[in-house]
Picture (cartoon, rainbow, N blue to C red):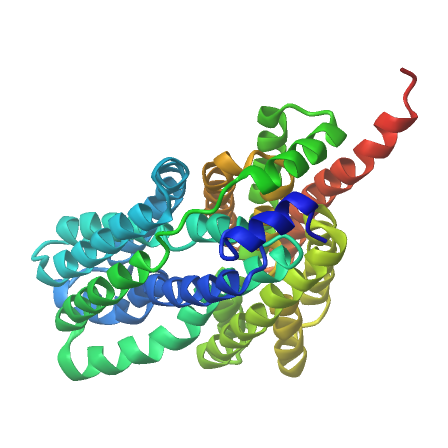
Length: 412
């Protein structure tokens, strides 16, 4: 329900209040931007064999640009988040679009591996502008339907993973990876810049400041302490999440099912992840961000346990679908938590720090799972490692949810 002050503001300026028709139009534009700008997360995976053959290098060397892409994305999440809080989302997206365009065009003209690596680091920074800052921005435009809005916007990243790979694959086979990179860079520039201009209107923060302060006070934690706890939770959940996402293809190959089966399971996982992101948004509107985080983490643990218990082909397809359905809403739930417990003026920066933590969790989890496999000759111990990290995430969520009750029962 809108307050009387919000009702009067709505009469004066109906597009400057949450949940208005303009809010939904803005959500549509943000989702399109996220889908286009998310190409950076998926293009190199498709182009990797062609890049390796062109430079005549080993697979490990050829993977270095992707590593720098992820590092650029992680660091860029804080940089672009801070930029968005200070100058607004339009300026941030414009900078991101230019970085993506220059990154792709630079990659297309790279004659040495280090040049390609630098181009992909720049591309990672640009790609980050279309995720965390965009989610934080759309959260300002919704109150009653904030969860589903964040879920839809964040699903753009998974939509990019569904739509872009076949497009990239087609043009790499027809025109080569260099021309494809240059073409993608030009397309991103001519589409993302005009779309960014459609988001010039800035949302007043007054409508949400009081609610955020009330929620934060109920936890009895300083903003810094809560930020640290959420960052640790982000690392923990994504160490667990990375095990199937990074290793499912190799796991299927080891079991004798072939890498093609593993790729199908990964695609199935991403498809159900889209459903999860929207569905978890609906749940968050009912129970809040912390409880949504707890639900997703518990269900992710269930899926990891199933992976450890069953390795039949049909079972792995079903479990992969369940894993995508369970885990897709975990990361977006952090955006809801940030909007509930921090100042709206710091939302993009706060979320950027947590997203950086989740990305480091994915990177560390992918590496440690491979190391455990090398040491044990099996992925079973790696799944158990993921379950242990997942338990840490569940423990933090439970502690935060229970804390207001404990504070209310404590003697004055």
